[in-house]
Length: 144
Image (cartoon, rainbow, N blue to C red; front, side, top):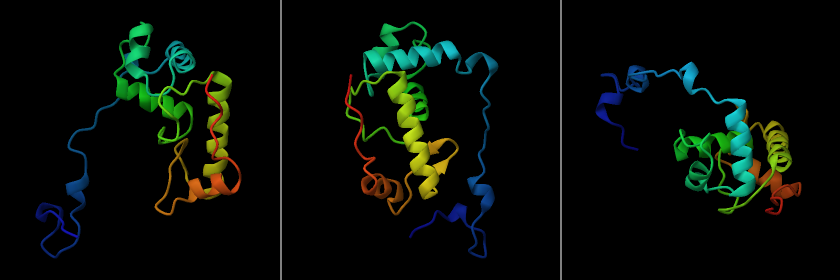
């Protein structure tokens, strides 16, 4: 493995200051996610589906102020999973289904040690995916 020279101290140990953020940005009160925006995202997932972030922004003025990356991240957190890749583009779900996916991901994450900050995060060994396959949880609910 090749390490950048500025990431190492003179003795070859890792320079921890190299990895310290140069700037920390805190979310302002005016840009916090509200219940109205959360409801609009649930409605967007039901009407347009996963991956249709630009369409959601155009269809709902409440979501228009958020960029597509933020909508994707918020949707993945609502579903309790770091990755939305297992859901086909356009997969539609109502609030109950989204909440059910969150509960499923939480169960899997807690059973495998892959539940981090309210999100199922796959580890290097694929523990979450293996657990889901072994317990019949890999199937996603049908799209609306």
